[in-house]
Image (cartoon, rainbow, N blue to C red):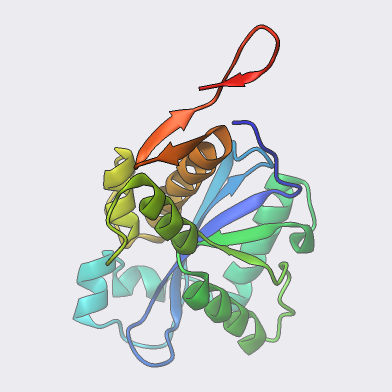
Amino acid sequence: MSFKFHYPIIVYDLETTDDEDKDIIQIGAVALDKELNYLDCFCDTVYTEKTLSDFVVNLTKITQESVNKSEFFRVIGEEFKEWAEKITGKSANGIRLAAWGSYFDAPLLRKHYTKFGIQYPFSGTTICVKSLAILWAALSGCRTDKISVEKCMEYIGEQPIGHYHNALHDADATAKVFRRIVSDLSSGCFIDGKHLRVQYDENNEATT
């Protein structure tokens, strides 16, 4: 792919309780380098004092037992930060986070760090993959209403590594969608919904 970001990217996803507070019960993430190559993954369950609803258990397959055996966010949040720094070789503030819907995940993640008295360690800039996916879908002739990670994975012909609504599986799927969008937009253009990839001749001049 003919592009380069100036920072590594952590694509992450959160699973939560379904009450108003939205306690985080699982963090999943995929680390990408500046050229969006895979580096590593992270996943851990987070303790909450609340009882999980049947809806959450059935949707996420996260059991009350696994939550009860887990650590509070103050521990998992620090482990997440340390993992991100170790695998990328950057301080957390030099890493960019990406999420399917940054309007939901970013404020919630920040809220939990604050709740446990931890300074939010990451950059304030979060990449919203859903916004990019809507643009990609519009250019490629795909439907843009009710767009989701699952629908985008269908569009690009990819399969999840497991069931959706698992934080790691969703983070991995989001990373796949993100990489495909960047690849298509950096290597060609869409004309009437068809992607034309740029080729280079012997004089290093672009052709299609």
